[in-house]
Image (tube, rainbow, N blue to C red; front, top):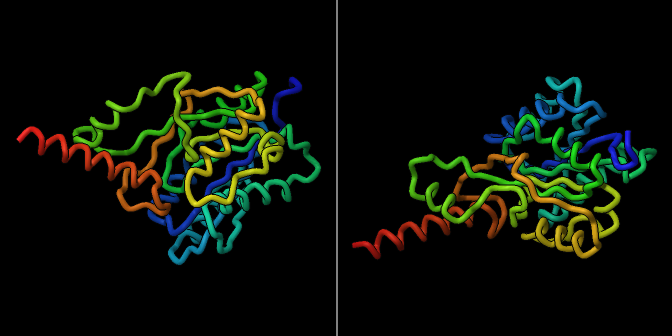
Length: 244
C-alpha cells in the first residue's frame, strides 16, 4: 500500500423525504462498496424527514452486512450543513484513523452510482489524487426534447468542467483543511471545490464514475438540479415557439 492509498472509505448521503428514490441509491452504494477491500461506512443524514426514509435506511442496514450504515437525524439549515453533519459522523466513527487515509465519497439520495464508483476513486487516491470530480446524467427519457437538449450542452469526458455534489470524492484531511462544506443553501459543492483547488490539492475530473440522477422537476434544493431541468424545458419550449 502506497503512502497515498486509503485505509477506509466513507460515503455521505444527504436525505430529505427521499423514500421513493432512496432504496435504489443505497443499493447502488452497497454494490460499489462490495468491490473495495477496505472498511466502508455509509453515513445517511436525515434532514427533517417526515416520510419513510428512516425505514428505507434501516432496511438497507439490515441487508448490507459488509458495509456499516449509520443514520444521523436532525434539522439543518442548509444542504452544506447536512453534508458537514455527515463528515462529523465519519470523524466520530474513525477517531484513530488518520484523516489522510480516509476517502470520502458524496452522492445524493435521488441518485444511483455505478458498481465501479468506489474502486475507481480508490485507484485515483492511490495515485496521489486528493479530489475526484465525477459526471452526472439525468434519467430523462432518451426520446424527450429535454434529453437531447442536455446532451447538446454537455460533453462527458475526461477533464470535464462540471462539479456535482452527487458525484464527488475527496480525501478527508484535505476537506477538513478547507473547513468542510460551507453552510450554503446552494452551490456548497462548487464553493468547496473552489477552495480545494485554491489550496493546491491534486485533482482530476473523470467520466469513469458516471452517476445517474433523478430528472424530476420539483427538487429539494432551491436552484438545484431540478431547477436546471426546468430551465431545459424552458429552452425547448422557446425553440419550439421560434419555429412556429
